[in-house]
Amino acid sequence: MRGIQIYTHRVIKFDQIDNTMMSLSGHSVYSHDVLTVLFCLLTVSQAYVNVALNKPAYTMGPFVFDGNYDTFDASNAVDGLKSDLRAWLGQCAVSGYRQTATWWVNLTTIHRIHHITIYFRTENGQWGPSDGLSNRFLGFSVYVSNTTDRLQGTLCYKDDNFTLATIPVVFTATCPVYGQYVIYYNERLPGVTYPDYYSDHVASDLCEVEVYGCPITRYFGSNCSLLCPDVNCQYCHTETGTCHGCKPGYKGHRCEMVCEGGTYGAGCKETCGTCRDVNQCSINNGTCLTGCDAGSKGDLCKTGKCVDK
Image 1 (cartoon, one colour):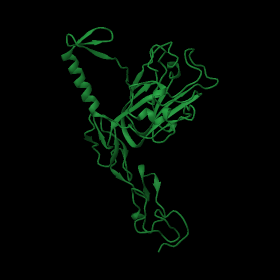
Image 2 (cartoon, helix red, strand yellow; image 1 turned 180 degrees about the vertical axis):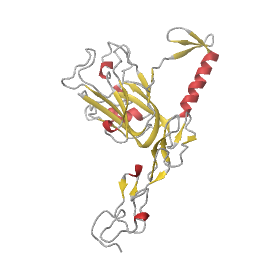
Image 3 (cartoon, rainbow, N blue to C red; image 1 turned 90 degrees about the vertical axis):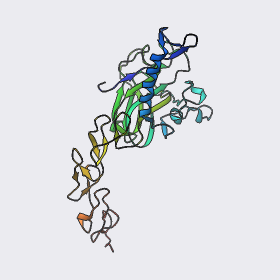
Image 4 (cartoon, rainbow, N blue to C red; image 1 turned 30 degrees about the vertical axis):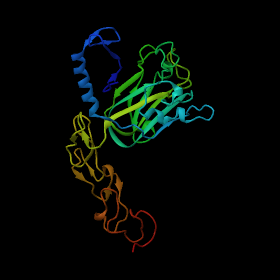
């Protein structure tokens, strides 16, 4: 998918005898090279924070055994624990097998997201064609939305390439968008033909979902240190700083125009009520600052037939 970068993870270990590192393929990697790589990785990892950590989460059709919900709860996928990828150890969100699977995390506010990392459930066994688990994840999608409705958001990634031999245990995709909900979705719909190696049903068995981005809106750049250049811009492009959304009360490519003509709010798409003075309608939230005209009531002067006193 265009604009998406996918990463797989390879383990490196130290050889304690000659102070080199060994990759799993058996090739030596000298310590000074590794230190350089680790420094670069550390620099990148410090640029963004995991804004999903300990945030509210939801699983459609969670797995329950003998009344036990906590062991498989949706929140297990955002608790920061990922040392054991087995279902029964309380570090994974586990669902029942269904025709559709949905899991989401609520970041509680809109964030500028850079990349998303998913740790799939593996039971700590051999991951591959014979594991009996990976076929349930094939075909998955990742969305970012401002609501729990994935179709109202942005599709960050749709798997149509992985096989049982190539799907990674840990999946990462860049997704430089703004949003409040990160949604994992998969399906096996009746009447749809899927590859033979896909499972008949799907599950959202996720041991950790990490959403990396800037902790504060209106900032951009690789270390989230640059303020969006347009003063009335609320969200700007993660790399260029180009405005993608104005503060309530402003519009235009650079948010240089103030709402007018009795309008207010995001993009000036809301209409003011019957304010006593239409020029005293707040461009931010539509409040009538000098009260309502006769026959209306409420902060927005959009209800009732009372005379404002």
